Image (cartoon, rainbow, N blue to C red):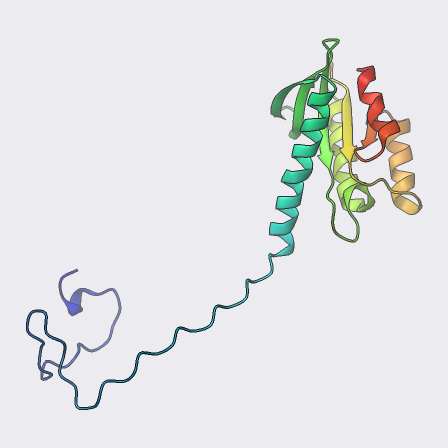
Length: 185
């Protein structure tokens, strides 16, 4: 854009009666030059939004889960989308015995209701498990979580999902007895 009249907004052009500086010369002013202003103090960093923080924690938790599976000898194949039922698996892995297992990761280390304690998170895992069970020959579906519901409606939902075999197992990443079950695949 070469001229003011070509700018994408309305307005009046600057007045032409002001003297123009010559090449390399500073514009003339009617007042004394002001002292250089001190740089503004740096603003403190803004806190991350809940969603941004949750995304970071989710990735960190997934890395921990992948590390655990690799420790148990699983060959990690990565995410898998099962379009026929609309479910995305966090990790498809092959156990040392050759069994394909689908893993869903649900966890974090912060928050008031992390992992499967949050009932909407638990319901999503249950819905995915139910949808996967509708496939002709689904792989075992294992949920790895940071926290399990201990009482109330969350515990009741989890018990029902296990009874209905929507999950092959639910493993708490921070429970050595639970993680030891990964060796059974």
